[in-house]
Image (cartoon, rainbow, N blue to C red; front, side, top):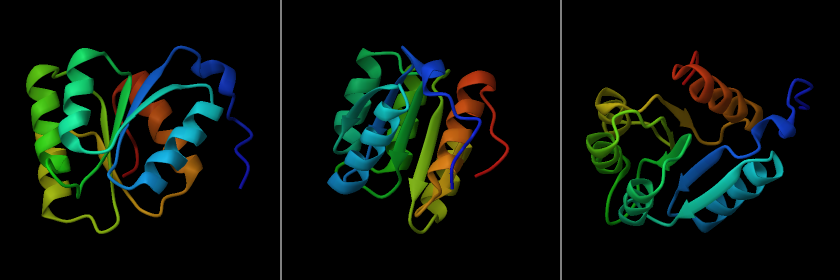
Amino acid sequence: MVDNNHNPGDNNLVSILVIDDSPIMRGMLTDILTDDGYLVDSAEDGEIGVAMALKKDYAVIISDVHMPKKNGLETVRDIIAAKPYSKIILTDSFPDKLATAAKKEGAACCLQKPFDVNELRQVIREIHHSGKVSIG
């Protein structure tokens, strides 16, 4: 499906952090978001992702829920504790109690994998501009 309202030029200088232990998912999200004009950094686990998030201000952080070393709930807690204004989108194949708890801790939403790329784009736009999302 083509998103006719999508204009990659609007995303210049907007930084996004992708945290996912799957190299395929991390690479795909990084490629798509970079092609969309975002500045994208990535981390292979929650531990590294938290360290990166504490060193740099990201407009949006996208984090998997189930990861080794530090899961999505722990990642959200650590980032929100240090930077309560952080805008975090969770992704998960099987959203469960961890995803629900992470939303209570401050994550904006949880997108179930596989998700539509245009849905992700919509959520990023909404969370970046208003801090709220209408889906997920």
